Amino acid sequence: METSLCASGEVQQPNRTIPRALAVAVLSTTILYVAIQVIAQGILGSSLATSKAALADAMAQVHPALRAVMLAGTALSMFGWLSSDILGSPRQLFAFARDGLLPRVLGKLHPRSHAPYAAILCYSTIAIALALTGTFNELVVLSTLAIAALYIAGCAASWVLARRGIATSGTPLNFRFLGSATVIGIGSMLALVALGSRQEIIGLATLIGVSILLYLIQARIALAESR
Image (cartoon, rainbow, N blue to C red; front, side):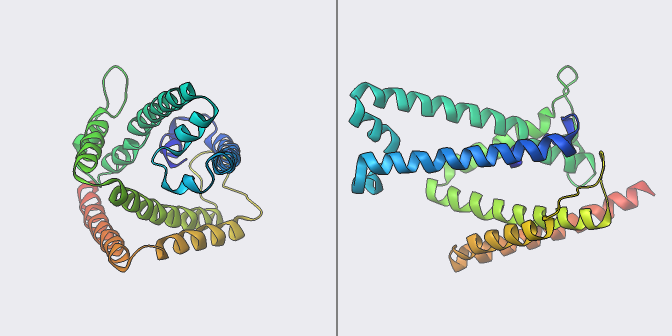
């Protein structure tokens, strides 16, 4: 869902469209994932824990040909996700570059498609390098901890902006249970981070500290250039 938010500035009436879309997407995805887990567990039983391709193995119990269908569908689904991520996530780099917090070159737009092609190429290069040099387990932990930190910041920012009545499009967020949702969101993400090892948590804290330091330096440089 964070990928779609990266492009929310290009959506009409984002203050109305994005919350509804997120609610529908999260609810439907949760129901789908729970149903998949229950069905796979019912078919494979205890062997689910040791299966390297659980859903494909489960479908093979119904008919051998369905295993190939499931693997093909998985590849197609992953291709679709990668395509959306490559087009959506680089918008973060583009926004930072546009605001002077990253090199200006990352803020360049393609003359015909108006896509941030420099940011897309940079993001893709970093992703390929990480995929080729890291193991699946390492990348999962890295992704989870980094996303958890962003979610914590997002929850806190939404509450602060709503309290101050700040909105760049439409009316400020007016969600009755925003305070409770903020506490639940931050609390659940902190619990997720706490599941990491000591070394992983220290690494995350170091990354956040370095990122904040770089942000302050770049913000000061951008402020000085604007004067």
